[in-house]
Amino acid sequence: MTAKHRPVDPPFDDTLYERDYVEWAEAQAEAVGRLRDLRPAADVGIDHDNLIDEILDMARSWRHAYESQIIQTMVHLLKLEHSPARDPRLHWRSEVTNHRLQARRRAAAAPSLRSRIDLRDLYADARKLALIALEQDAVPASTLPATCPYDLDTQILADGWFPGNRHGLLP
Image (cartoon, rainbow, N blue to C red; front, side):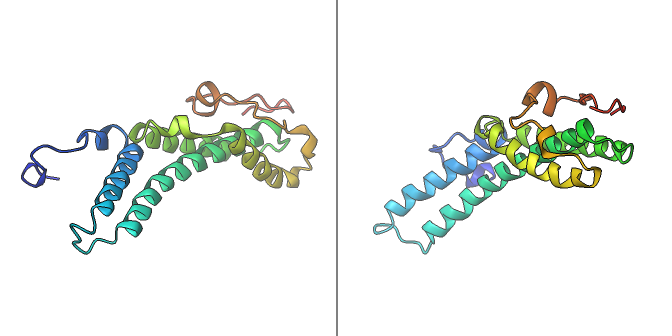
C-alpha cells in the first residue's frame, strides 16, 4: 500500500505485515469484521463474511504449510533412523534439508507459527506416514517411538542434524 492510499492515522500497526504475515492476516480479518458491524450505516457492497473467511484461510494455509514441512522432516528423520536400507539415504537427507529450509522461511515471515503448532499431533501424522514408507523394509510399527523423540529446535529444524541409524548405517 502506498503512502497516499494509507489512512492518515491507521488503526493498525503498519509494520505487522513485515513482522508476522499470519498475525497481520488475522488482524485484517478482525478489521473487516468491525466494518461488517458498521455495514447498515456504510454498505459499500463488500461481502464481509466471505472476505473474513478468505483472509483467515490465508493464515490457516500458512500454518498448514509450516506444519507439513515439519511433518515431512520428521518422516524422513524416522526413515533415516529406522530403515535398514542403504538407499535412498542421500535422498532422504536432501528431503530433510529441503523441508527444514522451507519451514524456517515460513517461520521467518510469520514467527507466531512456532507457538501455534502441536508437535505431539504432528508427530502422530509423521509416524503414520513413516510406517507406510518403512513397510517395504519390514520395519515393525513397534520400533518407532509412540511419542516424538525429536526436539523441534535442536533436531527437527536444526541444520545438519541427523539421527543415528538403528542398523549402524551412516545417515
